[in-house]
View 1 (cartoon, rainbow, N blue to C red):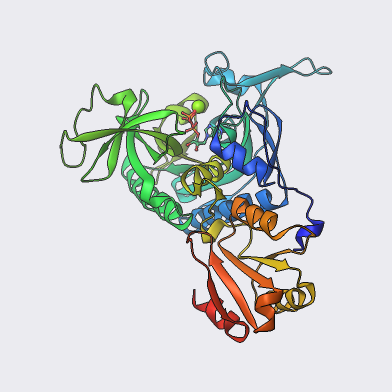
View 2: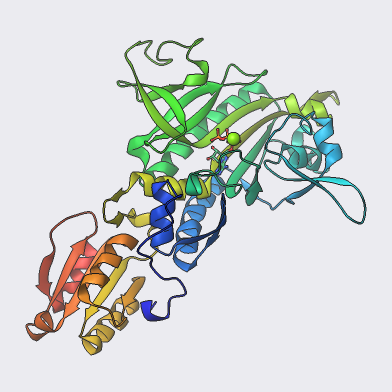
Length: 411
Ligand code: ATP
Ligand code: MG
């Protein structure tokens, strides 16, 4: 992609009211644009990052038996009355249809849709287990949507729902999901700071589990066991005062953001909707359910909070908008040639062919944060050399032009 024709532009400043780092860097870098508080447009580069995260998550959900569907965001009031959440969920967006005069909700989560849906698909033990997920825009009337992508009023979430015959089967699947979530955080580059966290389990389970990423931008407080690297959410520290793994009381208080939450719902929702299956003997039982949420857009914001320096974003390779940022310093012909070669070799390249000063091109490259920067200047071109610099490192390397592809494939 040539930067001269890119829809999004970098910006030097954002308004002073935007306090979060991810908002500032993502807006300045031209990844997103804010329509109003907690509501964003994803511009071409931001959309690429979001899709990369989404695809990593999708692959892992399919690997663990998930089948993808897409449920409606518009939902009838009746379903929310059945579960008793129409009046109790503060962040539920509600409105009345002008024509039908019926009350509707805009989905903040989908138990109220998937449970009655499952009644049309699951009848006997032969239909179980089932693991159903979607990656969809959720809506929540958040009180404080001031943390950029960390807390949207409209945001992208993966939600998977499990349906099993027994609690034991549910437990096994749940344990498998913990491993899969850890694998996802590893792939997107935040595993070092992301901890399995014991959290309230509601009325039906002792605990739920959250995945919390350490960052000063976080709105949660957790207590981390330095040895086991598992944590306890502040909400349950009164009943769980020691590390659940090693019983140590040497815990460190840190600020964090919840990037995933998995919950054993057991029969809470199957009871509400009378979701049952018949066993081998024709006897009817309630289905055991679990739900597994993961905030895709929040992850994008979290990555920026964790991976940046004073100059801009440092995207981990797997989620970077491009592999290479190619910068031409008054050497357009040679740069164009190298751009074509890089593309042919399978690299995804952002080519800065704009008529800007070297200084402002370098500043933008640091802000945008593509993992590898290649500079072609007249001075280097004369000696058939190019300059390569990793965004995560401070010093560039000068290498022979003919070694470029070999070098890139190695690193
Ligand atoms: P929080 O306590 O931060 O409000 P939550 O407990 O309400 O989170 P869940 O209902 O468990 O969140 O939603 C599943 C996942 O969706 C969360 O782990 C988080 O990653 C993401 N998420 C929740 N609310 C938002 C939001 N307003 N904006 C972006 N992502 C969100
Ligand atoms: Mg919430």
